[in-house]
Amino acid sequence: MLSAKYINTFSGINVQNSDPKCQDWIDQITDEVGEMVFPDFKQYIDPKQLRRLSMLLRTTLSCAKCCVAEMKGAELRGIVVATGLGCLDDTRKFLVDFLQHDIASPTAFIHSTHNTIAGQLGLMLKSHAYNITHANTGACFENALLDAFLEDCGQDEWILVGGVDEQIDWLEKLRLQDTDFSELNLGSGCTFLGISTQNRNDSVRIVDVNSFLISDEIKARDHVQQFLEKNNVEASSLDLILTNSNLSFSDLQNVEKQNYQRSCGAYFTNSAFGVEYAVQRIRSGNKRVLVINHHEERQIGLTLLSDA
Image (tube, rainbow, N blue to C red; front, side, top):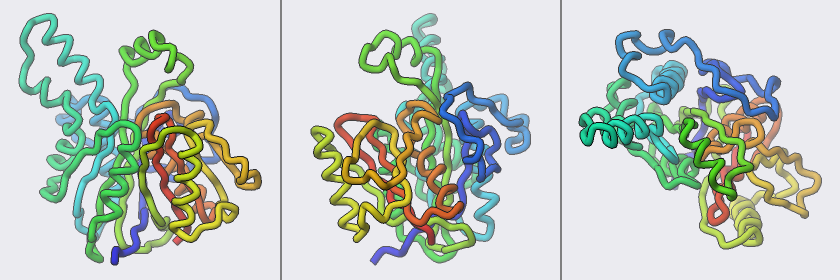
């Protein structure tokens, strides 16, 4: 029997919030996807290290260190990172260098891989524990969260789980060239969660999380219904449904619904932003929130959260 898992703390940097220590920014949320504003990273990272880190890694490490500070007294059991495109800007630099000079340094290649994020976190947090990256695009964050959900943590252990993706100019050019994506408002963001079996003050319970392959919207709605039934939850008892698509629910007219993608932009792990928002809503009084990730037509990710 798996022990219950709780989100004890979180930290994020996104288009709505530039302070990784801030956990109550929902009153200022808008539907405008602006430019990312970054904090003074010297508060979180040694200035000598900063010079060797890309903006994505600076953001990642800052958020992770905020979670570590909040989870003091517990041992870090694992680092689980979800990313759709990895260190995209470093990948661009590696490819340009290789094409222009027909050679590239091993360092440039290493920094271009998806595993760089989790690897750098392990090095800088001096963690020799479980370390893995989920990079299966559409539902990678749900799979990372499920990975942590299934871990058998001890009473004084915790897992760092994050979802991170960045936007670069190349991505914007590709979006404009593809009619299927030309209407998307691209975004970027970084969210990390501290997860353990301890029910602390302001903890939010992870009731269940999963992802499914689907063929159409009817199948998507069927999976949502089956997911709720499996957890003995009446759809009408939900306080809020957060989604990143236009998936309609004709039988849930009385349940509040919000499209979080309008606030954070489109990126592969933006359901991590949805979970960050859901945690704040539950801390503000909601009892049960369902986060739906359906930005890919053939896949759906579902995360059910409740007050502890």
